[in-house]
Length: 111
Length: 113
Image (cartoon, rainbow over all chains, first blue to last red; front, side, top):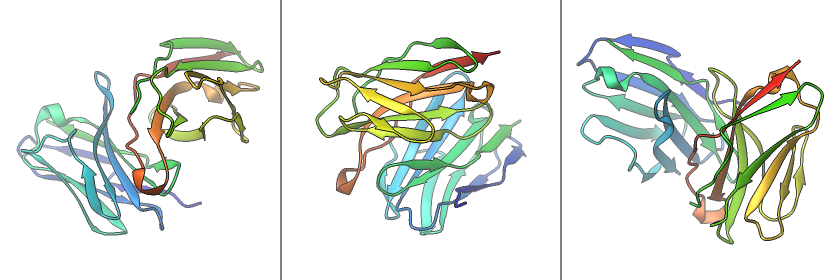
């Protein structure tokens, strides 16, 4: 089965360190989403891309977060510097025309 | 994207039909109704979507009212594994207007034995 692959699955880092999360979308999907999920805020859309171009990143804190698609097989979400409030599960999803398929997420803990 | 309203929680007995309602009174003509669910600790899972006709697939049925202001997701024979948070979302889909997928708080469905 085709699936969205996210790495790493878990990450513990110290405050101030750079964190990079990676996502491999399903082959042929031209839309990629990044979400953050916490108990308090639920699922928040951070950014999304179509054909590798950013369409909307209004949900992303610009001073420390950045999202890119270096190529069609890789999407990255970076946090620099990381803070304890960034602790959350980060999901990537990819889609083409209708449905979007989600990865299993990266659980980030910033101490 | 139009806002949706769902009950915070619902219960269902195993083997019975689960009917999850959603109100989307401000839906636009080019917006579809989507349903996703999220089982604890997993990524959200696509269930079904529709524009104005009722839809059915192997997981569920989607009933959309004629005025499109509300819809109901039906799980015909709920099992314990259907316990999850169910999200109703309206969005533009397809073509060059593929809209963002914005999640609300959803409905926590608990299926009990």
